[in-house]
Image 1 (cartoon, rainbow, N blue to C red):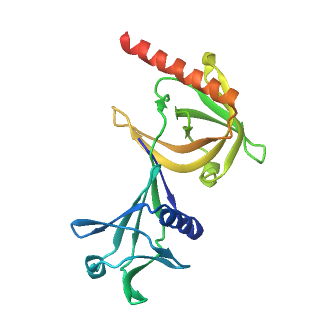
Image 2: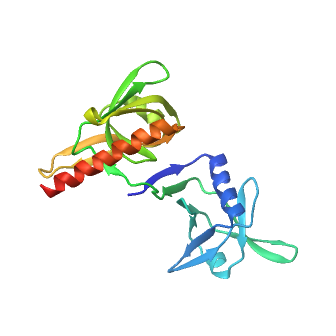
Image 3: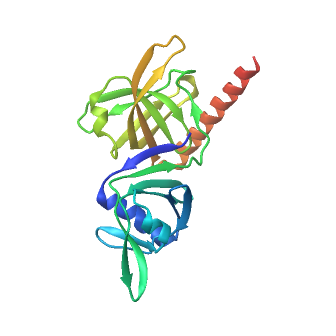
Length: 233
């Protein structure tokens, strides 16, 4: 499963669209039953230009965009496009969206741990208050943490948890900074139809040195071997 989150800040939205323009990324626009390929030509402080297309100009509803990048897919909706003319050439001008949904493509194998092990991530917030969360899953790029009941985590998105300690029991321990990229509330329904609510923290590892990367790699390999052994039983 890929990581997904939302960007709503104007400067972040402009940065994403500017990067797509510089790279010449493929941009798909959905109009009625068709998806049309286009590209971003230019940006100003309020919107962006794409090549003029009659079908998009006539589209009376909101436009749905998808920017395809090597590492991620960016999706957003905008209002109706309007025509502007520059040097005798027609273009479509579209105002910036209110938000962009980002789906990051995974580049690393991810191990799901929560239902098989009791491993923990612990540390201190900047104010000195301690935290102690279950590790839901882990990869070479980052992890997901389970927070059962802690109102403080709602404000963690975009922040860094420094010197977080990952305790994998007898397998080993590592220490790393964590960048929190998404915070979302999850509802799980068990086989007996009972409901469980928790908060899911999506995190990326930051500035891991070679020694820590080797330790993480050894831990993941040991967990994979243990998983394969249990499957054979």
